[in-house]
Each structure stands twice: as structure tokens, then as C-alpha cells.
Length: 382
Image 1 (cartoon, rainbow, N blue to C red):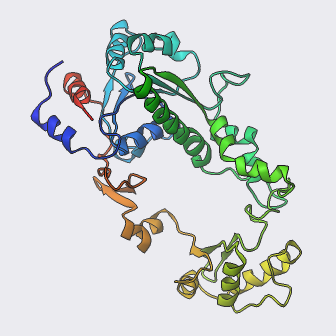
Image 2 (image 1 turned 30 degrees about the vertical axis):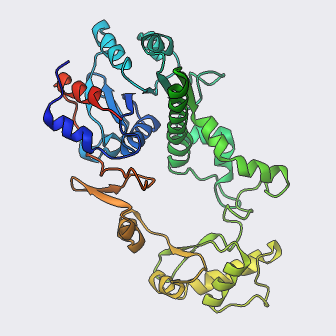
Image 3 (image 1 turned 180 degrees about the horizontal axis):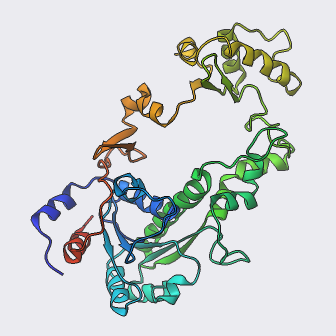
């Protein structure tokens, strides 16, 4: 491959983040795989996305600049039906710390890029496998999406209001929290192990496993008899009046969460209520308390209540839409959102004192100059 040019060398030396020099191959997929790859790229890893000819049917088509999970890394097209294309990926594997794939079990083996083949070329390789159901089990080869994985873990049944249907959450809980983040943690743990021992391994990241793990606290509460089976009847699921949302006079909403008694007292004080008239945090008082709190919030606008509770510990916050969130003073002060090529989007997270992350680069089209892209990717050093 050609030597790296000065522009690429400069880019390599200025790329920020604690994962600078970690090389990752991403076999293009949808959902949690790209989210994991984006996260690693945000943290400074050199991720190379391998696309199939013709691209992917991602289900929700959008212009490239708005497909934000593809930010921060270049992409090339490789025909994996061609032995030469498979060999090209294996050459990259020889120089990679990790590989991410999100196909159904057996697909990578079928095309000649399974874990055994790849590890034979690079014994230090960490092979990350992202699926909904996992690599084994009765459902391992079944289709599914976030809502299906949450359904079988008990999480979906727990989300919703009393005497109403379960609420399908955004795919943040399953795909991204239970999937992408667990894959990222697994990859980084295995990379540390590989650097210590010289031995790579396979990481089986199943959304059902990660989502179930996220619910650990609730299993403890169920076992202790502190969580009721009926949704919408518990402290954290809208059952408690001090952990819920309320509509204001302008039709907008506030979130209320003063679980601690001293914070709950500040909420009552701000609303002009007291705890001597059937209002309190005990379950027998919940209905009356909810009615009284709701009546007070219905008398003024969201903005008025936000000013009322500013600089207090009453745990009252405005329920903002996507645009409003980017304009919130706290988010603006912290730089939680950044403008990347004219598209406002979340910045890299978390923050690092010694190795701050760079502002992400926008999603890139598939590059036809493979040699330049591969030369730049292979040049990265710690």
C-alpha cells in the first residue's frame, strides 16, 4: 500500500481521544453495530467501515449527512462474494485490534470471515459479534428488533401506566444501551486482555443479555417484594406521584422526581401545598397527592414553574423536545451538542481530562480510492 501522505499524517497526529491508535474494522450493518462503531470513533479509535456493493437497506432512508451513526470514520466498498474482497478484509484483519459484525449467526463463517479464520491471521484480534438474540439459543437465527428483545426480558412489560398497555420505548434501551454499549465495553475489556496476554477472543454481545443486565436492580426489588407486577404502580414507573410528569396550563409538561423526603418537601413548598392534608409519599396517600399536585401544575405555564423551582432541589425539570434540548442553557454551557457540517448533534461522551475527544467528522460517502483510505487507516499509532 502507498505511503501515507502529509495530510493524512497530520490528521493522524491531531486526532483526539483516549482510543487513538486503536484500529477497528466495522462490517457495515444497522442499529447497534454502527452505534458502537460511532462511539469508538468518537473516543478516538480509527474505525474503517466496510460496505457491501449497493449499500444497505437500513429501513429508514435519509440523506448521508443526516445518517449520524456513520460519522467519524471512512468507508470503502468490498465485494464479499469475491474471494479477492474477502482476502482484502483479511489483510486488514492482520493489522486490526478489533472487528465488529452484526449479521445473523453463521453469515460471517459462510463468506469466509468467521472468528477462526480471522484469528488465524491475527491471534490478538478481538472479534465483536452484535446480535439481538445471541450466537446460540432457540431464537439465535430468528429475526427481531428492539421491541422484541425488550419483550422477552421483562422490560417492556414494566414500562407503561397502570391499567394500560405496555409502552414501546425508543430503541435506546435495547439496541443502544443493551446492545451497542455492552459491545463497546466488551471490546475494550477484550482489547486490554489481548494487549496483556497477546491472545484475542470473541465477544458475543446479545441485546437480550445486555438489556437483562441493565434490569439487575429491578430483579433485586422483585425478589425483595418491593416491586409490584402491575406496571404503573411502583415508585419508578409512574405509580408514585413524586416521580411522574404533569401538564401545565400551556399544554407543556414538567418532570417531577423528588424521591427523597427533603426534596419532596421543597416540591410541596414551591407548589404551596403541605403534608398535613392527606398529601405525602406513603402509597396510601399517592392518589390524593397526585390529584393535588396535578391541580397546581395546571394553573401556570411550564416556563413559570421552571422559574419557580430554579435553584431549588425540588427535582422539577421541563420536558423538552429535541430542538428545545439543544437550546437548554445547561446543555449549551457544557457543549453537549455540537454543529458538525451544519447538523446539530450530540458531542462525544464521556469527557476526558488528559485525552479530550475531537469534534466528530460528518458521515463520509464510500471512498473509491481504497489505497489512500487504507494507507491512512494503517498508519495510525498510539
